[in-house]
Length: 313
Image 1 (tube, rainbow, N blue to C red):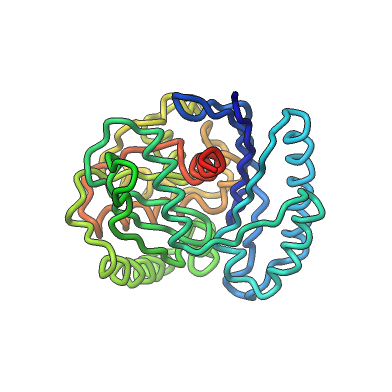
Image 2: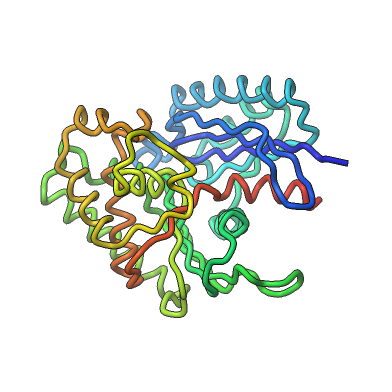
C-alpha cells in the first residue's frame, strides 16, 4: 500500500512543502512548493521573530494545510530550523503553527538538521564518492556534514557534523548592508565566515572527503547562473558539477550588482534577490576552506530527508 506523507521545512528565509508517496524505489513527488517568508528577518539583531514575519509564515502554512488535505497526505511533519532555534518568542510561533497546520512544529538542533539534509541529499544523488562532504547553506545557518552515502542499514552514516550560525540572511544583515556592498563590508563578512569555518573544521575532518556536495537554494541558484540557464531548471541543475572558478566568478559578479540587476537575472527567485550575494560568499568561502575544487549541486536536501523519516515510521 502506498503511503502519502507531507514534509515541511521552515527555515530562516523560506518555507517549503513536499507531498510525496513512498514505494519500493523511494520517494515519488506529488507536489513541491516554496514560499519565501523571511521568518528570520532581524532575528540575528533582535533575538525575536517579527510579528510581520510570523504572519507571512502563517499565511503560507494555511495554504499548505489546504494542499495537504486536498491531496490526501496521511502524516505530516514540520521541521523548523535556525531562526526558530534562536528566537526568544519561539513559543508564540509554535502556537501559530499548531493553529494553522494542526501539528506541533519540531524545532530541531543543528545536528539533527545536518542528518536530515545528508539523508535527503544522498538519496537523490546515487553513485557519489565516499565519504561525502555536504554543505547545506541556509538563511540563518550552514551545516557541514561528512558521511558515508554507501552506509548499510545499522552502520554509521554520519561521520561528523557541525552547524554554523552563518547563512545568506545572517551574513547579509550583519555585513552586506549597502547595495552593492562595499569592499570593507565584504571583508568583514569574510572574516566572520572564516572564524566560523575554523571552528567547524575542528569537528569535521574535511580532508577525508572524496567529493563535495552543496544543497539548498543558494547553491542551486549559483549553479543555474554558472550554467547560464535561460530559466531556472531543476533537472539541469540537479547533479551538475560547478568548479571553484565558476563559483568565484558568479560570486564576484553578484557582489558588484545592484538589486535591480540581480532581480533581472532569469534564474533568480524574487525572494533570493536581497541575500544571494551573501549566500554566494558563504559557498565560495566554504570551498576555499575545505579545499574543494568543485561542488556537485543537489536539488534534494532536508525536505526529502523529512519525508523519508515519515516513510520509515
